[in-house]
Image: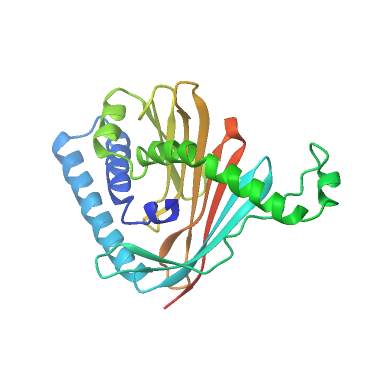
Length: 257
């Protein structure tokens, strides 16, 4: 799963630009239409320049992406990959090992008895591996759902705004503007984009949605951070599929040029 890659600043450029336009329109409601349009265009141009510079700076870095897959609160598998941008602008990932399933620690079903058996560790490893393998189709459906939100579609954002299904909050945290869109991709969902107005950077993205005919709840939370030189990047992404008790946590760290 390449959630960390999907949430790079360039991927969410349109989301920020359209969101800022919505915020600008609300802030200047009732003013001269020509002045409003000019102000929004200026804000979009400013954001485009800032995001382009940030993306260019980010492409100089190599970093480590750590993915943890948990089931029922226990980490079952951990993967570490070295990431860098290729000449085509896409992220290239190299496996660093550590992808073997974690040894099961659950006490359900007489696990202690199994631990005492011959070759118990290998058997448990195989059981965990089979469980993860069996969830590939479900996780594929989750990934497809996530694509509907990452990157946010400017047309869907505009449709939500025109339908009055967008709210702006400047009081959630100092210096942070949060734009919340409802009924964005599926009825009853929620997409919240947090923006650092002063730094013109993403602070976070949060999604609440449902999956499949059973309407399984799925949440996605992305937290952004800045490197010492001010480059913005997705520091942590957490996806939770409650029905299957699955959590996928992706951490980007150890950035270096």
